[in-house]
Length: 218
Image (cartoon, rainbow, N blue to C red; front, side):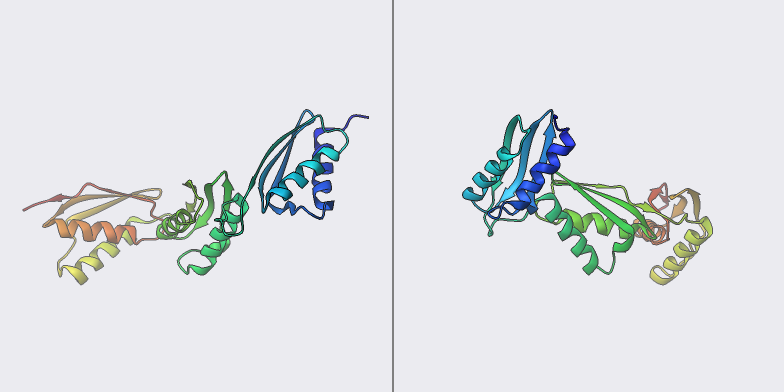
């Protein structure tokens, strides 16, 4: 009886597990119409040959595409699962990142972050931390900010910031919310005050975008 590709894949994986001279942890097995593709990393050339021989021993293998690379212990650890592990470790050490609510996926070095956080800065910090890991070729940040900001909260934060930093009233600033987007309108007296208003708007929970339409009246 001919084996299905799924059965063949399991048999090859079992054979690699059974072979004592092969560490299958970093070896991937794919099967398509009886053609087996081995990918990933091994620690030496003899181990690479042993993995190839083990796969060929399995009944039902029509052909073998061998894409395993030799990576020495001193080389950077850039397999997808190793990258994912280092990102998760980074998140656990970073107090700014709620690691329990963020999911990490790595495919060919490209990182996709999903999940939900309370604050926009947490999403940005997670993306920044993931991008620093060796072997990462790009980051797709799909993390959602859970809370929806209110216009009154944002306005209160802007007024408080103006009083702390500029000693003036922010009465000339109006705030409009649209989901997680904040639109700032009105007039301020200086460019520095415009920056204060923007930073205060970003500090509100749930803000994912700030559109600054403030004008400066000299």
